[in-house]
Image 1 (cartoon, helix red, strand yellow):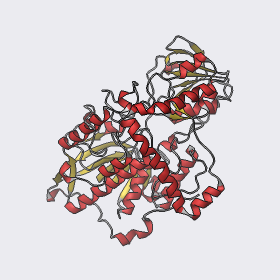
Image 2: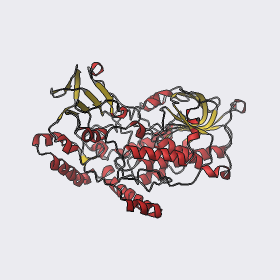
Image 3: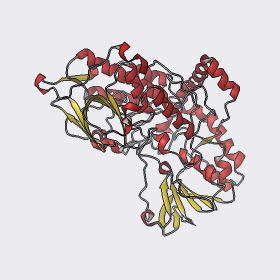
Image 4: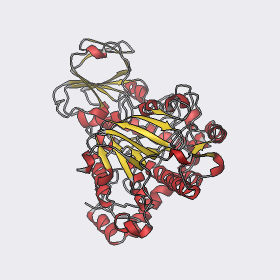
Length: 523
């Protein structure tokens, strides 16, 4: 199968990653008439974070009809907030519907990417061979590489240890004494899912999260039939979900004091499930709601109130089978589950990408410079990132941001065609600096910077390089077109044309069967 074929030769575009960002980029390339591309995936299956995170209770905290591509609506979502299994199945169907499987290269971990200035192309070394590409689209996503904390004694723990994103389904937790480390989105879903089965569950909490009730329900058969018969009703539903979240943005970005009502609802969510005043105090955050991502669950607090659950301070040390909390309390455990997040602001892929000046992408980001419009970094010609710096959201669907970045990708490729010949675009350092200075000025008023917390939104220098400080509408306007004034145009000498030139783009009608403008994705 092509999905497991060796990687070699030259392509116009190499996409790295096969989650929402990578598959979305592949669909957009086909819709633009570009078929000379590959999607490099390090795992043995597509799906990105929705493949990797298969822990008990895993589900999305964005409504299903908003957490899907606008060009691939799915009328048959079974729940208002869909679980991991259904989202992964959706991505598989997207790949089939849009004919993406011939472009997939599974097990092709991108181990090294280096810019070839002489030929204006990227040299890519993968676990399945090497290739070159005119353009690279990095869609690895910020939630792809688990962060494992350096906890003394963890390496010599005699029991079972695994990260939430690398769940060991062969290990039975029934009747075990389990330590859950962390209180992020994954932990809030895992705790109620495993609590009824384990003998004892100890939650090691550094900082309590704000948790709102989760208004999840089954989508009725009548609703699904209506969405199938009248697709406009599904679009209306999506539009309403989107509009409500757009109206919320001002409270997060300009008027954090307006979040008081939301905080009162979250406090009632704690009080309704937790009778013990001491436990209630331990679970109540001391920072403004919204500073960290607001989590959704109607089962988390009831699970913590059960007699087989203890909530203690963060994990400080492991001594043999004893887990020691920062407050000195101890617990004998058989298994340790790490819900400790991901390398969001320091992704390992950035260490593997070497640009025009010999620096890695990681080195270029350490000064907090960021990238232009979340896509282009200075010194990395024809290298675009999907879900790049400052494109994250605190209250809405990342699919909206991904689709905006796909608009930018499409226009970027059109500009290369218009310029003609062997050409590349390299973001001007001044343009990158201006863009990020404006972002950081806007960030100063946001709840993420003023709410009194330390979150994974912040990099090692304390700069918020993760979240977009505006509406999705603003971002779509900012990424609708490529402004050539923000780029330096690079041209290769005629003598340096590579031995494997990029294939010409087909005429629009030549590939019409495989590039529908949109398609309904069904079971």
